[in-house]
Amino acid sequence: MDDILFMMLIVGLVLSFAILGVFIWGAKNGQFDDTNKMMDGLLFDSQDDLNDAVDKENKIKEAKKK
Image (cartoon, rainbow, N blue to C red):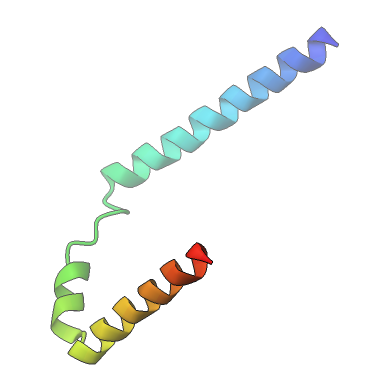
């Protein structure tokens, strides 16, 4: 029984460090950078689109309250 727990611990640690390594690699290479997203959203979203988004969020909040 102890061997199985030890193996699970080792496998879990290896997977955790692998995932952390992939995340750090992605962050260093700019995979999560999106500097134009907010500016493009401001330039190409119309007033009606923004009002629809606010209405949708309000409906979701009301549905959660019920």
